[in-house]
Length: 444
Image (tube, rainbow, N blue to C red; front, side, top):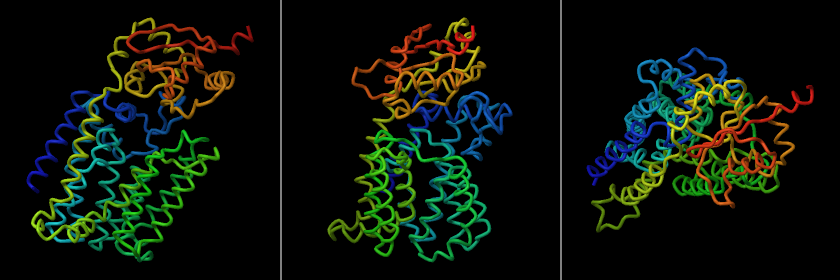
């Protein structure tokens, strides 16, 4: 069964990596965003990115180490740089997981636990949605935990800093060490510096988001709450951490209902994954005790009987649809491209245009549009935002949904049509609207 699990793992990740190379830029919207950032880095824009967010986006705000490596590779690997970095992350994640688990349990359980790290729906989802900085942050954090368990705290601290700089959520994997040993003073020796840097990152770059339940992912909150329950089942002495997690979940729901600034619940599934990662060997031991004696010989294969079908389902559902088509932007008429270069473009969708158009000299006033950013906004306020951001054109991409759709770009298109902005281009599910310059008209 273990050998079959290894074969299944290799087959699944061969398929996942193939998706990135065969359907480059169209599998998930995170892929072109990271491809764009890597391209900007390779062109020397290490501090600010002049092509998105009105030229105010900090290029290395997060994902710095991974993006820098990608910037060095880009002249050789081009548009496939993200695919290559994700492919390298697969064996790296497996190897570092196995080394950490070997410090916590015997080699047989550690070997199975490392396979489970890869062969579960969450990890497959993170790869399929191209969470490049997050995945490499996990790798660096695992290296930090391994060094800490081996007593090399200085190097553990440096690896921890590398992890949180790559993605601040890595602090939750470093914090999960407290579930193994509740000695806070011992934990602070290697991880105080990464913890301090994480707080600085949160204060400088990240803010509470959303003013309604549209910003609250109920599914992610539920996943997080379930994981807190599982952690309590595995480690009863960890009840203070579990209680805190459930309290945070309740706060996120209540603040969303009250339309107050709420927590970024879109990340709760990742926090849940990081929280329970180091407890996988303990979970295997617990399940061993629950398996009847008659099938005791299959005890280590028992978790795989549940994980493999769910993982295969994730591969099927996430790899099936194509988000968009880069050729739509590569074949734009020259006259349209010249118009778009005249001012800032508001990209009211999320996809491959983030990589394709800036390479042609087009600048975005934003880096994509989330649906809650335009939910229930009135046309006058919307027009004022476009004026403040000096937007000249609006790009919308997507298949026409039904009239009850909640897609942000569809809500936005209805506002645009209500304002009467002229449509200057429409082909292959791509629409481009021109924004009249009201202030210029008033002055004239």
